[in-house]
Length: 149
Picture 1 (cartoon, rainbow, N blue to C red):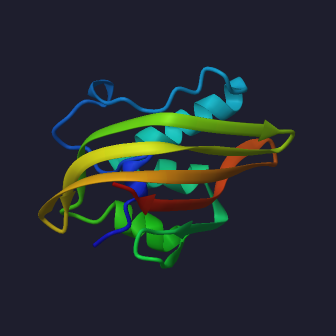
Picture 2 (cartoon, rainbow, N blue to C red; picture 1 turned 45 degrees about the horizontal axis):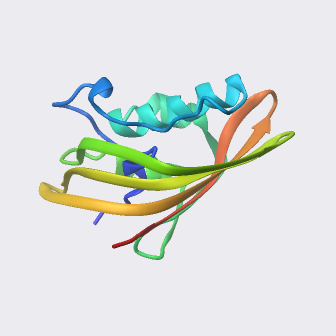
């Protein structure tokens, strides 16, 4: 089953539902540039926007996925944009944020519904995204996600 990070912030490929119908993260307490980057990341995952994912993920990005595998940026993007994978709804809540100079950790819970390889799924998990400001741009450098009951 594809990695479920796209359900964060996450979720993944949107076809049938508008972005406004979902509950993405509340980044109102973050610096404006980081808040904009985090929102862009959430929406890019949900819409499976390859160009935006390329922009917001660091070249050395690593995802520690729900199957215990480490995925590279290229592997994650290929998985997120794979035909047959789509997210119908996502809700991010119970958020935690820690920000310092040129780094940040954004974490929380995510509930998502959609399909993966043509099979419907419901997912609840906890995620942690590590961000770094590089050359004046916020980039996600690491994500870990795991399912919870």
